[in-house]
Image (cartoon, rainbow, N blue to C red; front, top):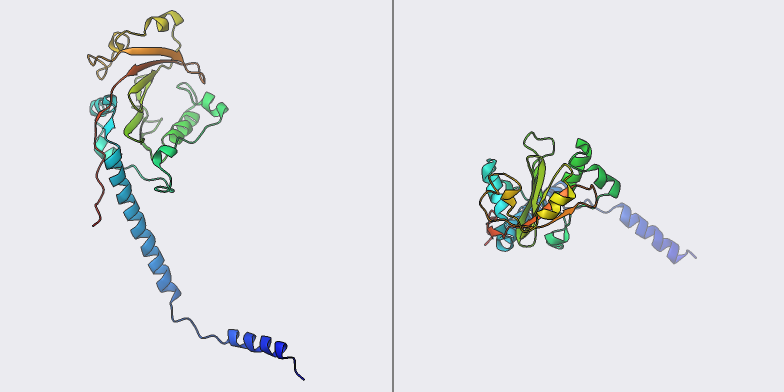
Length: 238
C-alpha cells in the first residue's frame, strides 16, 4: 500500500511547482513603493517645518544682527533645516551633536588643523543643523541649529567664536588672556572689552569668564535675551 503522507508531499510539491504567475506586476509594485516613499517624505518634511514654525519662536538677537551684518538670508538658511531620520518618533531636542572623542576635541580648537576643526563643526551642526559656511570659508564658519524653542548658532567673529543657544551667549577667544584681565571682566559691558558692530551699544553685560576645559581657550559669557523669530512655514495639508 502506498504511503499517503509521501503521496501528499508529492502532490503539494507538484502543486507549488505549477502555480500560475501572480497577476500583480513586480514592476508596478516597485513603482507604487517608490511613489509612497516620495509622498510620505515630502509630507514628513512639511510637517517638520510646521512643527518648527509652531515651536521655535525665537532666536538670539546676536544671530539676527550677525546675519544682517554679514549679508546672510536667515529665512532662506533656516529653510534648509531637515528632520533627522527618526523624527517625529524622536524629538529634535533629543538630537545633541554627535559626541566627539576627547582627543578630537583637543585637536578641534581654534588653532587646530583644518580637517579636525571641520570634522568637529560638522558634527556639531549635523541634521537638524545647517552649516551655512564651513571652517575653510574665507569669512569663517557659520552654523545654525534649532532647539526646543530657539534657533541657536555658532559663527566666527574675527578670530573668535560666538555662540548662543538660548539666553546665554559665549565668545571664545583663540589666544590666551591674562588671568587678571579675565577676573576684571564680569559686570562690565562687553563692548568695553570687545569692539564689533553687533555688540556696540546693545547693553550686553559680561556675566562670567572661564577657561575652556578642553583646549584652554578663554571664554566670555554674557546674556542676550532671545527675540521673536519665525521659522519658514511648511505646506499645510488639508
